[in-house]
Image (cartoon, rainbow, N blue to C red; front, side, top):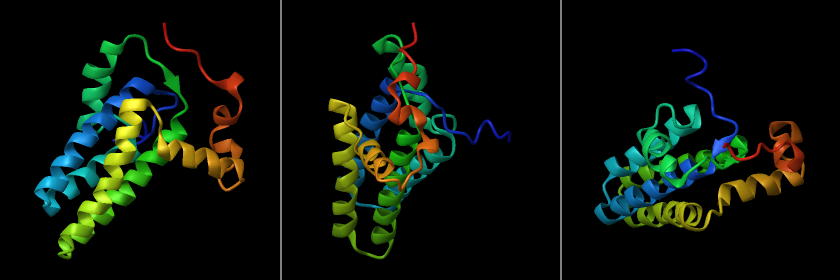
Length: 163
């Protein structure tokens, strides 16, 4: 596969990100209700695919980019690195839920997965990306270098909405 497949888009369509988050909310709630390791694994794999390739390899990403987001009109472009960081946090949390479930700690897995529901719900409903906020906090403190996302700190580098 080419290197293009394993790259994260920058910028990202905010509507696609929010749509994907909405789909994650639904799957995470189902995983919590059913409380089976396989559903936590599906969640973690989805996050892993999005970390590796953005929407390219992710079924939720493809559905969001191709079907759902275009219905909201022209793309609203936002920097990609904070979204990738947020997906990485989601991967970490869902992997923890999967491991807890496999080890027989179902209630702990449900509680951990509920964190994903909260974060994805904030993203999908009100447009607040918790992972992006953490990214910005870390960037302002110098933990994440400015070079990782110059558009995050310099509004003049942000791209206007596509027309």
